[in-house]
Length: 338
Image (cartoon, rainbow, N blue to C red; front, side):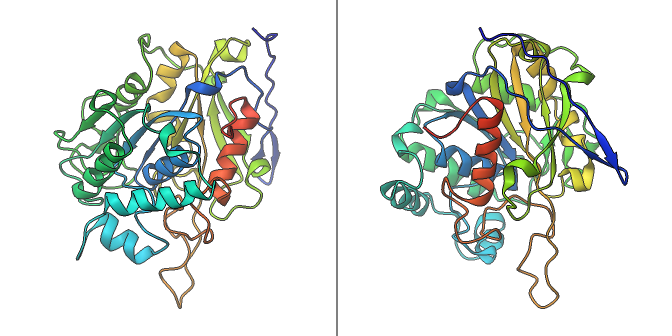
């Protein structure tokens, strides 16, 4: 065990904005890092899992789709991946893209994905991301060698497009901001229980465990990323005990810029984290207004980059947003690079 860490988080207020400290350095198991996400965060979670598969051991995907589904095109993102017009998302094409990048050593070896544990979810009332796109993601994992015993694929809930939480204010079958929907079950718990074994029942999170940190220190100016983000640090982890890292990625219109701290506070992860020595990292994306002459440019809804708005390299280990998350994970004690 490392020496207990005294974590002090100072906040300096300038013009009403909190300037936060860097991430704390914690004692984390590098082989126990997992990721989850909703919508654009789900696509981003897949990209993170594939790029750093040697370090990431599981993923929870809510209303996402296959790796490289958009193929550098916002048109494909909209009309192939989200709302298929002529063709559906293609798992074989996704696999070929992964093979090409792995051959160039731009992502980790694909065989590292096959042992991963997976939670997949698509709501029956979700008309934002097509069920066929999630089915294609499941088939992509099958092609990668993930066995049925490592899967949970939930499709029978009459849920809209959103993260299911008992603290949600949106009716279960609705799709509207803030996309935190109440379907009378604990999705964060279901995800973490699938990704980890033998979890203890949740407890109330501590207010002092919820920390705002300076994300700008890790982004290197990556397009579409906020200067501020959040992390939840359980008491045992702050005291130096060995803990695990879960990276939770919000969806479009769910970043701090739009709904404040709600995704990080209301999804339900922190309750489970406190009881089970899991640190939860909540990276934050922001909106980039589209120019008047090109609606397809920019990132007006504050989504994670799964179609290429941050640049031509958005899929590999060196992609701006992926490498920013990697730097955050390394800083807190769970490096993703092998």
